[in-house]
Image (cartoon, rainbow, N blue to C red; front, side, top):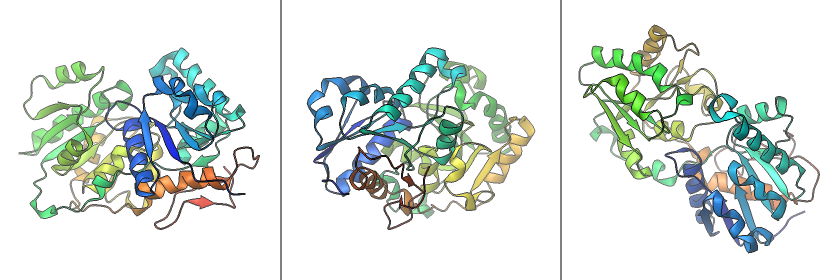
Length: 348
């Protein structure tokens, strides 16, 4: 059964570098390419949009902190951008997020979507949640634009994202420091902000080879990635990692933990363009992984399957072809180039 194309998409976003903010902006770009208007609003404003919440012609895509509005909404997709961590977020927020996901499961007009199979497996097996679809994160169109690769001087090792203890930068930083000492001309750049910034700045102790850039817009991030040889992240519970996609698309090699949804992005590149950190974060083993990442030439990876338009089409397919009152749990899989990402035969 097919229902009408939505007249508008309402998306709740975030403020941080990368993450939910980039997800919302990329998805909005995708819907624009499909000719459907969209609007991004903060989660705190969702209840003030009561008319849109109740309008069956408006598709709502809600981030975790806005899922509480699902019982009042018609035609809604609830997002699980990851799964909560009590050690980092505290038990109150942990329980609030799980409760919001449970709420999405109980709402007949809501679907729960995870951004990776890694995330979906945890939500299903640990928290007993039904995940209706797995649809990967979109890559903004500006990261797919061609550029003169030969003109780029790459002498940076870069991180983009929140400066938060769960990102494990404090555990990777000693090995980065060792790498900079043994590699003349190499510098480190941390883009983003957060509660751990002061601690990280104390750890580098004024070393001029470390630069803290604060929060930048997408064009600014892209500019730094084009000066980067190796992108690094230490978050072992990363749900998928928009920043991984952005870095690979700009010709960087990526170093990530040997765990998390990022491993789903391009398994065939592991060992060549993607290099894995030990989960122990042993200093010598981490340094060895960083060294290996400097081997390949900096060639952009083409991500047709992650184009914003393709990902937006996958959301429309979930919304339009399976009525919200239905009971069948249709699964989505990683969309291939030129497809909508629909898998009618599988279930999650």
